[in-house]
Amino acid sequence: MPPDGPSSEDPGTPPPPSEPADAPGAYAGLPSAVAGRRARERGWSVVRLLPAGASVTMERRAGRLNLEVCGGVVHRCWAG
Image (cartoon, rainbow, N blue to C red; front, side, top):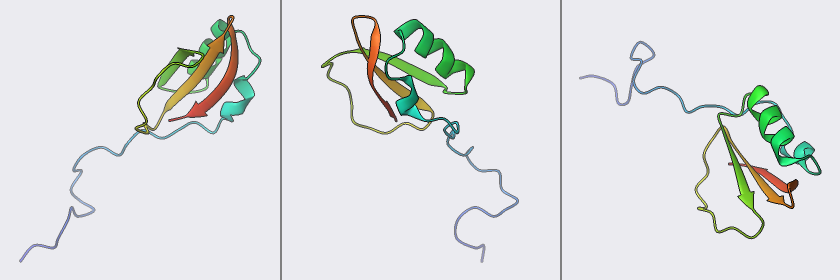
């Protein structure tokens, strides 16, 4: 009888993307264009530039950085 779950030899599905070793809060105060470019250079696979107060989905997605922008400047940042 085979063991439950995938074995170490079974590649199965790829692991979820990981997040870069980067502090999301470090983007606060930066111009949105600079913050977006820097986040991509540092390995974030998805960077969302969101207007202040925008409705967003609450699901967490590894590798995604959310940047809330007001007047062209990042005011709030969070991973997921």
